[in-house]
Image 1 (cartoon, rainbow, N blue to C red):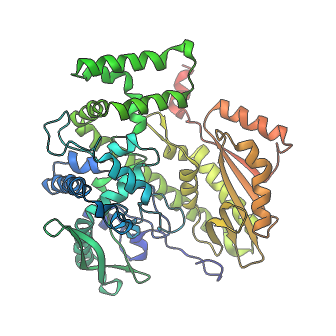
Image 2 (image 1 turned 90 degrees about the vertical axis):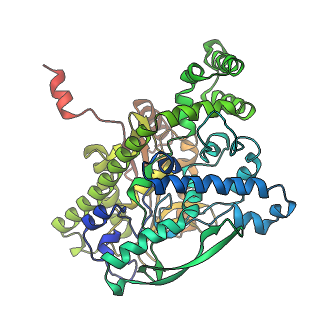
Length: 498
């Protein structure tokens, strides 16, 4: 695929390995894309909440490993960089093709920031391994709440590493029973399983699907979620006013009530960021407050399964439908019967992307149960799913000396187009529009650039229009706005007039 003039017509695992999507579905595996990570994640709470004993045992393994780290952290030798990397800062298991990476599947993995956050909090928020505490067990997701920069991708990567041997066995069984022998081979896999007797990571050998001489690892659908783990920061904020009702510690309950009175006092006129800062400072000083929040999540663990399944089904359907619809459009219009420039290619795909979001319910990938989950990263990831069946290269975050462009589309060295994605809510929108795109075009030696701005409310639309007007860019054909405001269904619109 790319600048060699060949058009890639395959996108999903099932297509590359010549099997029906339904075969994977019946086995219980998620049909991943081998060209771009799908933004779904392994949620360790699904292991805990599952009725499957094998999943519950995997969650116990995670807690056991955290206990090992807590005990081992008392030894100074564990703080050596090599040991931090070995036991805390795992690489991303890119062979699963899930997560946040837009181009390919090689994400950042768990770096030293995560390693130090985990190490430092083993003595505080993650210290209840052997105690009869408030919660039923310990949950790694507490790190998401207390540590800035530790998100769903980090928790998913950590969990994937600790259950890797289970995923490898799951994939090997499918490879042996359902895939052609010519599409599989035996691979040696590092860090396949942790030996708790010897306290070392062991390698293993597995018969796995082979794509470009690299193994592919399948993931069971019933371990996955979209957007966030069941235990997360945003949800804690949403439920903050109800937590005091469940707290059994009267002193802590009084502190929580005082905190709420402080941050909800309209006379103080605290910003949203300041309110969040005070909440998380309180949680760091009173980690039991998090435990009471998690206790409520444990008591509703059945809802966690239903919620994750619903989100996953929605995401999978929208991504698959978008790819299928785009292929139908390409075939019906004879898209490649005439030569196109990179700009023409980019505009065609952006306008299709815009149409899907605005008119075919594509906006739903940015929402769940009325709550907005949109970042520039997941907008870019969604766009990657319309970049199929093309002879043009799509490169993400290309840094040619003057900063990283979101995407550079090219056919050889002489035909390039830069694409930037922005949210209308971005506080730096005006600055970026004024300076950024011109810089990227210059750095990549192209005079072709397109900026896509996504807005999710009327207020954001008005703000965006104001910025464009001030900069003299309103109506510029290279700046494309996408309306991702939730739509009212046609049946409700019709019913409202009766």
